[in-house]
Length: 312
Image (cartoon, rainbow, N blue to C red; front, side):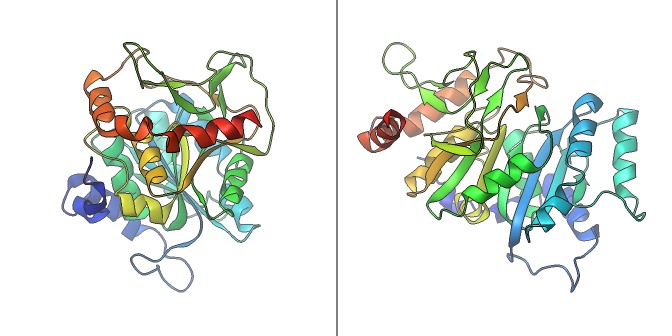
């Protein structure tokens, strides 16, 4: 198994990505009363989004979440959107970043950009959250998930009133209205035994808005986790080159005795593979994941509770 608990987030000290993230964190305006001490967290949500160019994705996302800080503040919660940019050169994207940096009255609050990161999904998310995140909940969000506003995020946050919850994902649809993601399940038997897949993908989407459902794992395209769990596990495992790190994280959370669930906020579109070639898979990542988790997944302690709950 991974030695993840021993690899806490301070392992990034001295790396280029963390140094760049720290510059942004230190240069941001301090909250009233001064910036919080290292390790101190505040009620609220820190969202990490990685992006490279694609003004058609990142600019609308910024616009849709521009009012999130105010919406969260109405509930006594903080909000920050941390954009990890991995080398954008598109003029429209750079102009949007410049607008975010302007301190003019009425500007967009709660959004910061970490520039010039070297892309690696796990490493970049880890570095951005380690250096810049201040809140008690963290979220990984793909830039191709089309959130209409902050309401879905607030609904997910409310689920953490249950102290047994460790991770919650988001129900996602394809643009045609069919299911893209509800939860991750695993093939049983055959040549692809225990390989993960999106349960119900392609089926007609039926929503039960405002509800959560049990899951063994959820996609990292929209995944929220307690910051203390994230830190204790060392964030996303960087041994995965491109995939399976989200499922690995969920199973590690379950192994600590916390629940994983999926939240239904209504029709939320995910333009899956908008920034990654369709069919692009990593056989080495899947082999690594299976070596680590096969025994755990084959335990009745994993399978039975979810199936009993789903049958109710």
